[in-house]
Image 1: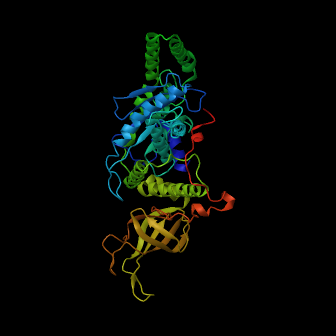
Image 2: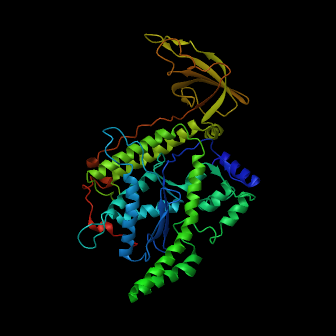
Length: 493
């Protein structure tokens, strides 16, 4: 947690309302998101009980596994869920946009919290290896559902991606509340702080939202009182009706269970749309569209992979693949941090406090300065910025300005005098091809500028060996991956 975020949480407590910690939105919000609210049976690693799912606010669909511990019931549930999710995904995957071109849009799935992300990951693990023939066959939609939700779960780990989002994580990246980070994982209390009902403070609204009777947990875990007092009896009644073969009694018991589960999930369904609306109300940052384009390329590539009969994702990465993945995730985390700082002055202010960025007025400028030390003269203007910020950059350090991100700059001199620091900077690009700078390309005296030591552009990853050159210390070259039937078996099933 940064200093400014900590200050915002203190202000939230003092003012009894969540405080914005961002000036722009740093995630893409689809015009047609798929809301996915899962519920699982308590005490089971991945026993789906119900989901409320849909891409229209007033047209939710409730899917139920009336006996989550029964294998046949679970895969019947998965087949129904597959029809919904695959129908939504296929709506974005019509035709082929052409080589090197992404689809014009991509699906976006929202779950309430981090628990929903983990549930989806486990659901993918338990379904993507299932066979549609042989012993214990499942409908074709089940393994395909598993591959897609596994893909989405993997994309959620990429800092730059907005294909699969947790509402609580997206909201807490933009608002600071007066409660703990653990309490912020409760979507009802989080939204109570951000948008309390009229006449209530954030703390008062959050206290009311903690009542599981009026605000059932946002999934995937159910409330213990509900399990004991309601759910246990409903499942038992359905089981007894099935054993006796009484179809009418069974239908009635299932209808009652459906009504109860609808009442549990509907409040969270409504909160999810409120969360989407709140985030959509913020203007997007400048780099958001660029990151969504990367998501669209990723989605397009996976559609083509499946159409070419690509294998389901392996249970574990090979050593080289794991190293490449880790390096990419680290690179993306740094890139996202830079994007957010370039797009949002509140984020940049956090880096100014640590000395990784500084801002101040230009007190001197030499816009027509030429470097004549080489064979031909080169335009190399100097500007001097005066700042009261701490400056960690030393002579020779590379700098970038959010106002001119493509312009390369270098520190020539750093002069510290008391609380003020003067930084002389040489501009090396982004001024045109002539020996006279284009208008506006060089800051003038009196302009307030900001410079930082980090870059927003993609950084090339380190060089890794090919798979066939995996060193013996990491297991040697891995065998060619071919899915096996035993991969469909989980220890917790």
